[in-house]
Length: 109
Length: 124
Image 1 (cartoon, helix red, strand yellow):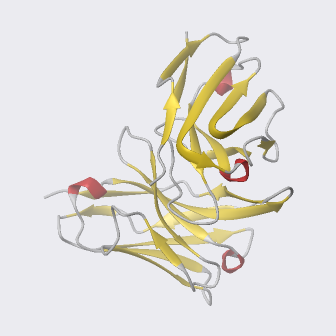
Image 2 (tube, rainbow over the protein chains, first blue to last red; image 1 turned 90 degrees about the vertical axis):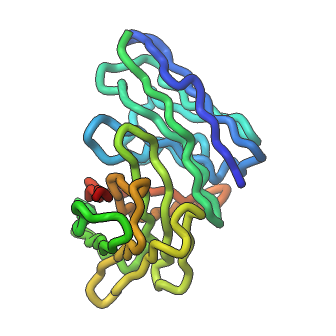
């Protein structure tokens, strides 16, 4: 069964800095099936990126996704205060299970 | 505005049952596949179950197979999660989420509308 491992577990950065979050799969994942979500405390997750690199509607262009095969990244070019949250990658392909990574917490330094 | 609302959560003893419901506003739920995703207190997201738009196919995480059942009533535009034989490890906030899709190089799937969640606590 596919396992998604996100790193780091916690990332401490300051507003204005660049954030790079990693999602590594235990087996190859089609780029079409890798999604990223953002979750703030007390809120439901929010879709950020699908197809590994396509921003969802309304997502600012400071968010970008990339990668292929087993290694994917989410990059936030210049952190805004509202970007500090937990980020999850997910395999959402044509068949289950639709595994989530364990999450990366992005916190203010 | 597209929204989902979950209901049915509560405190229940181990071994007991609970039924969660998910209803939509701003769109017709029966046109879409629906997932349930849960989050234990202080933990990450765990995918639980998925049902096709027409109810003809259902899928479950191994951790809930045989105990949780996803279903839908498209005449009332509602999706359910029947939870039987509840265990302490089922304690979580349960979210329902709509499966969206988009065409491009691939056909992309994603969860684009989420409810606020309903909390299930299994405790004696």
